[in-house]
Length: 202
Image 1 (tube, rainbow, N blue to C red):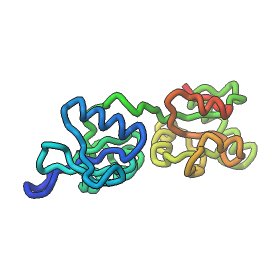
Image 2 (image 1 turned 60 degrees about the horizontal axis):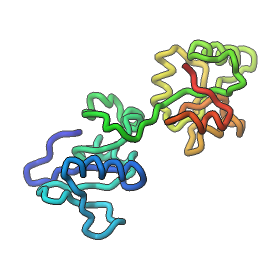
Image 3 (image 1 turned 60 degrees about the vertical axis):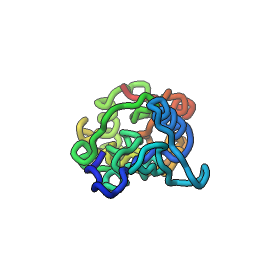
């Protein structure tokens, strides 16, 4: 949530533009008696709320919602906390996160190869990274879309001997492809990570 809009400007609510998140957001507002209206059809990216004057709905990607909130172009939005914390510096000061809505559950996790049987925690991973640096002269490669979250999390755990390999998709496949040793990614059940011979650290 950002500053209150001027009296003559509409309140802009940003919601996911497609998929299960849009369905869940629509159902959430529907339970409160609020219905989104797209006057130009389903492919319209702007809408209104039936019976509510002075409010607009912007249908955007989850990532775009974050940037619209941060810039003040949207006043309320439904998006992932992971994206807010990744994209907005000092997220707690810039965006007021009101409440979890009970859908779109996913966790950001650190996952390592299942073959690393002695690696269960960040302390174990730090040992692996230090050993890799001293014996092989290179840093542990970490594939992720969440560069800022990863850096902050690793810094909190004192892990320094690593380098980020930015991922644009299918992050869990990076170790098998040989582009990274480990990944930081989002998961709901861990099934995709397990299918790629990865395990989540405790």
